[in-house]
Image 1: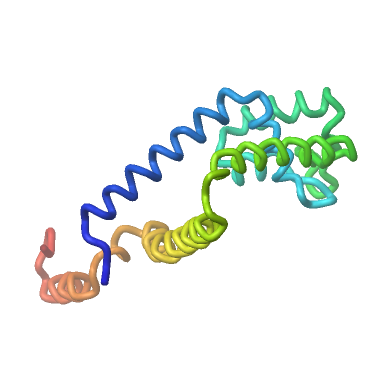
Image 2: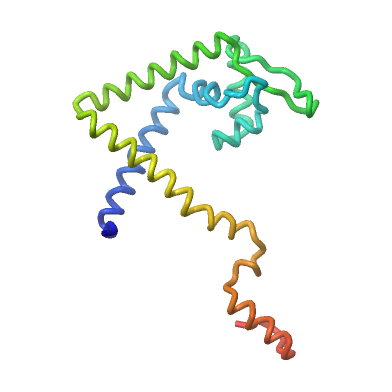
Length: 177
């Protein structure tokens, strides 16, 4: 049985409330922005700042600022991109990797405190459901993303397009709908 509208509304409110709280904590925590950038740097050859910004869905200027701070602290190394000399590659240093692990541990400990009174099965079920929601969200959104990349005329329904072509063949000028 599918959930009713009221159930879905309660879920949306809960998710948005949780997300807003996480965003607020990320803005207020000095290590959160650093951790986000450090976690993206998984490729041993490094990542371009534009790719980091894309992955994090933030402005490139914010990434530039974080990378400069991280480089100044010795957590990342910045080198010229051999494939594109106009860009650079950012990679973790050994100390950067250790700092990433430390910040991850702080975050895990914090969430462990949030769910300390929960049964293990509740944590496992929440994790499973959140992972399922993420998969279903992407599966559902993908056809819409593909449609939005097509030209406007290609997004119209096939019968309307066919009628429009038939009207054009018949010599009718103007809007076919």
